[in-house]
Length: 116
Image 1 (cartoon, rainbow, N blue to C red):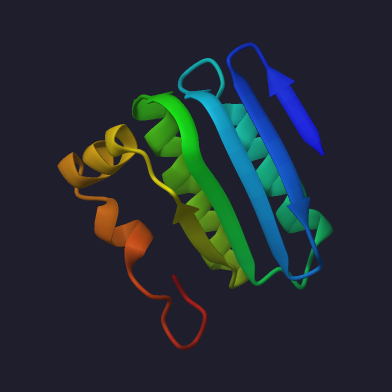
Image 2 (spheres, one colour; image 1 turned 180 degrees about the vertical axis):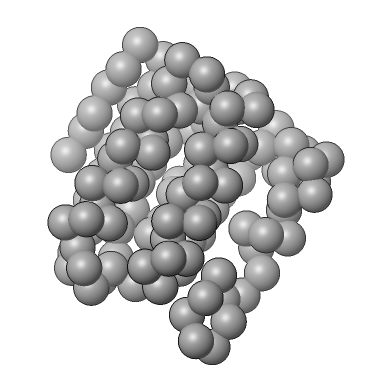
């Protein structure tokens, strides 16, 4: 399924236990909530979901709202025992995560009990 908004395009594909969402465009104040809505829908529709892959290579711009949404997604996936993967992070996202001290939050291994 592909969802488009002004400056954000989300392409979602998956199975009962794995979902891939390809993000293209700006993850910012105007658009980030659409990613959160898509993730929330996927988590609700797939109770057996174990892995959520956000493919980030196509992210053009990311601001504080985009980072906030990613952190919120991290909390929601942790609450459901789903592993969150931020795949193919572009340099601008990698730098933002590093500068804000959140890179480790997104890249550390999940705890054995499924907690994030």
